Image 1 (cartoon, rainbow, N blue to C red):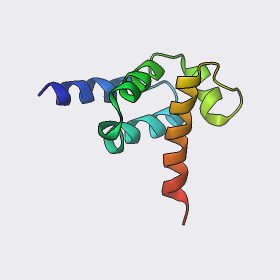
Image 2 (cartoon, rainbow, N blue to C red):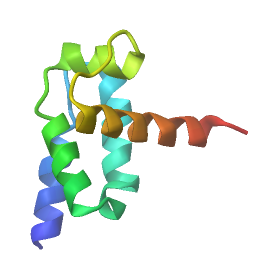
Image 3 (cartoon, one colour):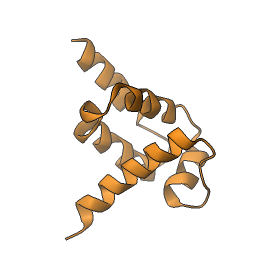
Length: 87
């Protein structure tokens, strides 16, 4: 039950002000969150506390994330997306 509550809370936190972020984060929670290590789960949850303009700049490659853990999480999310769209 607690896992379902946490996942519901995370999915709610994935609803951002930008569609570009929504389509990255919500599927990530559905498809990959459960497989993360405990530390990576904490990092992902911390990523969701960042401001939308910063998140957008990081995922679009306009800026480098200054936090190495968050930068690695952004890379993990983007790598999963790229793996899904490659033939």
